[in-house]
Image (cartoon, rainbow, N blue to C red; front, side, top):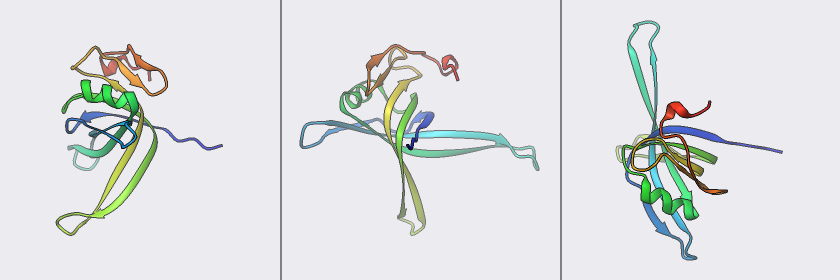
Length: 135
């Protein structure tokens, strides 16, 4: 048996884009910025690093995310699939992209009631602030 899960908390980098497949299934994409900060031991300077993820959400959850999520809002994403892709940027430099297929998106700030939408259970009430998350 194998198992993979990724949990991300970050800020939405662009408004979600909703489209439909030829068979009529909804699919929504948005970018997510996840920040990590630390203090450099040598210089005692505060440092920060941002990692960007492309998030894909399917089905009814995609439509809900498109309706409630906006650029700048904080969300928690639980995904069960992550893909890394390499490409060459416009400047000729090598780049990488991290793409996550979301199983659940939880709304953590503004633009709603702090609920979430899960592909297995529909809309759920939830904490409206990241401090309410029990882990």
